[in-house]
Image 1: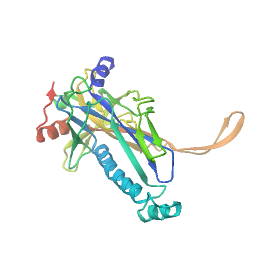
Image 2: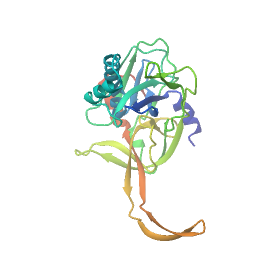
Image 3: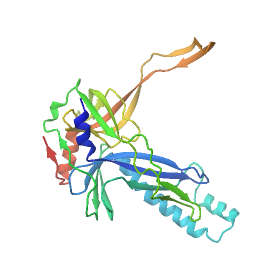
Image 4: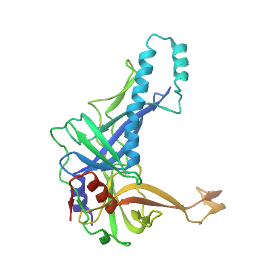
Length: 290
């Protein structure tokens, strides 16, 4: 039921890829998130927690760049002392590189506008001459058309399979490369609208879904079977069901084993379309409703 809708929404939904490593660890960790463009002017939507994650990268890399400069003439022991002084350890991110996949031809700056209350952010890309996305979202005109029992779909990039990166051993920095897999496959997940989420004043700001939003789908659109945007994936909560099993004897592979199991239901939470439209209007962002 979502085949045509997914094809439509995929045109303006894009992945954010990141690579990072901790101090003293050579292994590179891949990360992903999602955004979707609102119009041809370079305005895009994502989660506030994604935007905050992106803005942290610049500070992390500047700190590491300073460390590299100051440690150039130091021996191994002196480098470790300097690292300890600057607070580097294996539990903290040493460097982080971010790329926006198939968004625009070039970027000179990105402005971030964070919602003061909800997990919502606007991004304004600047310096580009050509966009790499196609189409634009149509936001649900009548907010009340989305009701419990309706089947909706989310689109994002929860499984980072890209491999176009490496550690430059000579410079001791992470780099994006021209080889390897550049993209990760998009992944849709459907679910039923179960309940609305309200704040302390009673204002509806969110939509609860019967299925989880997956890691990497944060910032991706929530849409109906016609492809109209109804919300944006924000987070997933985990509710204890109470169907607990403790020291239960089962036979597995011909052997008696005692198992424990604590059941949870994982429910996605999305920012409601009414909040998204209100926020875009506040910042003078052009968008289409239907």
